[in-house]
Amino acid sequence: MTSSGLNTGADAPAGTRNKSLIRRLIGEPLLQFMVLGAMIFAAHAAVTPAIPKDKLIEVTPEVRQSIVDAFKSTHEGREPGADEYRKLVDVWILNEITFREALAQGLDKGDEMIRDRIVHKMRLLIFNGVEVKEPTHAELEAWYEKRRAQYDVPETISFISVPFTGPNAEADARATLEQIVAGEESEETQNRALIFGERPRKSLEPSFGTPFVETLVALPQGEWRVVPSKDGWNVVRLDAYAPGHPTDLDEVSAQVALAWKDERRRILGIAATKDLGNAYVIRRGEP
Image 1: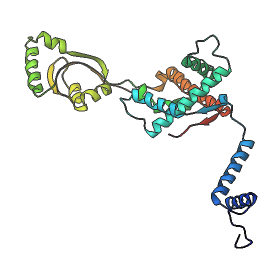
Image 2: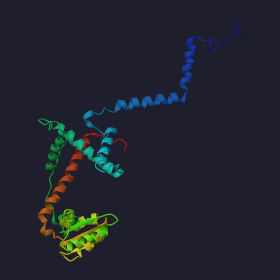
Image 3: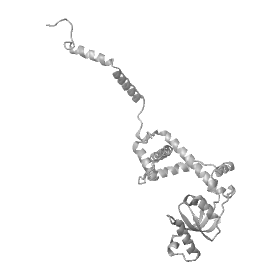
Image 4: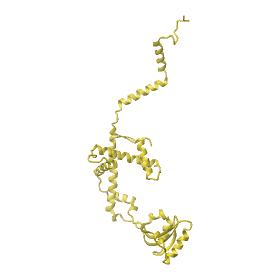
């Protein structure tokens, strides 16, 4: 016997209980959010065409790691900085575009599918296909002035050095100098002597230090002296010193023009490769 004519949850028919549950779920904010998200995702998928695999270039985590590993292997284990990493990724993307375009043109036919070789084939096609005009004198002069150090004749030094390091380096060097002056140097001293012929001055300064080089060029030629260096002491003999001098553009104009056109061709070739990349969807991923 029931106490009233009302139905409790247990006594309500199954259909009535299900309708009540549905009404409660519809009122839940979380469910509303999930339904809305599903509708947006479905609408996006409906209007966004799928990207063909051959038109997608993606810098995957595996690619990013390989880029970092390759950099570390050539930089004594150092991680690339942000700018360095970004440039490395740019190069990888350009190479991937070049590779894809090479495959599209059938340049892999008759090859052993070695990636680097195929990329090289395509790069030659791209770079040889760009038109490089002859530089004006003003263009050549401006380019040359920024790179004058590559063409100016540098100071060169020719000398012999017997190096000494350690706590007794100075004393050993002076004792060896006495032997050399007396013509009594040992075979060991002769074997330790290092010959430097026509070395650019700037190439010597990082190894020996600027004070050493400044002292060396001021020495009388042909005389043995003891001179301190960055890492120790040296018995040295200056054999020749040739001061550097600037080179006029007219002296190297043909060489400079070729270098200018090579650089211009590289710039235009990279731009052409980037234009080819417009046919691809590029996803750089997270750094």
